[in-house]
Length: 451
Ligand code: ADP
Image 1 (cartoon, rainbow, N blue to C red):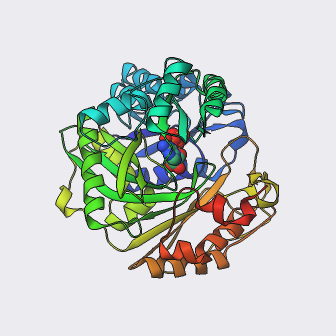
Image 2 (cartoon, helix red, strand yellow):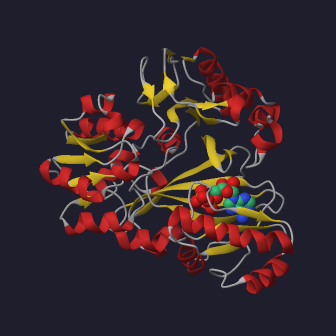
């Protein structure tokens, strides 16, 4: 086992990893930008190094500075958290070349799965269903038009290097496909330095179902069941739960088995998530992508299975075998996570930086709050707007929903705008309570999201 780990991240996930390390008796080295000087996670780490200016391109994304901190800090491994360098195959390769264990998949597996077109080829080989669409990148406009007319409109134009909902465009007809292709390529080149785009049939009102995976380096792959992350705004998740409401036993088993097949086919190790869209009309699921890292919503899977995913990541990275078998992993009760973001509902939910002047965090049975903020904390303009994750766990979904409503009512945050009012609406919505959700739910149903 490692004696010392560097955490190449900030905010709540840095805290989460540091806490797991402490419980495992591992020392931690933290890094921070000038904007995060004085942050709480730095107090909990054994050592901390400043790695640059506030913009992430000048600090958290600087591979050379993180590697220098790892060398000065004398660590054996680096945990990348999520975002920043977590899915950067080059970073994983540099770590390996410097004899530092990257806590995540190998750079080869990451490269294969990070590119959505090559990930689809792996899914095809593993006999995992794919959304009808182009076989690979679309070479030109006439090819795109031919494919779109074959699968039928609406179609979705997606960037092969895409992420975070960026670079996606719906085309309703030939004209919007022609203009959309150009715009999507320009946007993808700008955001990901890769202009490659592909086409998919646009599934109407799908549910987003994903499967949590953990795999060791001895060939053992287990799933920790599914999460339903259909509640999204602008393709970004806001509420996640496990088990997925109203999902049949058969579909749940099939989707989890499909995820394991894909991960085995890719030779993937460590924690990862296989994402699917579920077409409710057809009762079919389709693979969309693999997230080759720990995800924001991992706690709901931890809670229903009792498996600490961060510790599992560290153990398998150190070469240990998974200490459990698939049949021992049961989904117990219902866990729901709501993301609390510093955003302004009155202005199209744009970021709402500022100082938290008053903070009262809910508690009591079944409530967990993963967060790096406190009263007096100032949210700057540089990073993600998420300030915490409110997670509840109860024996049934009905009880979890009641617990979430109670916890949200207790929550007091003053000085900044947050997503709490929107979450209160969601958890009181009759359709949501019934489990009648899809990825367009918020935009269709809740007026407060309209700018
Ligand atoms: P990203 O990597 O940018 O997050 P994904 O491929 O994971 O992109 O898709 C994110 C979300 O976009 C999905 O959860 C879903 O809401 C929507 N989406 C993606 N593909 C489709 C599709 N073919 N039809 C309808 N919605 C889609």
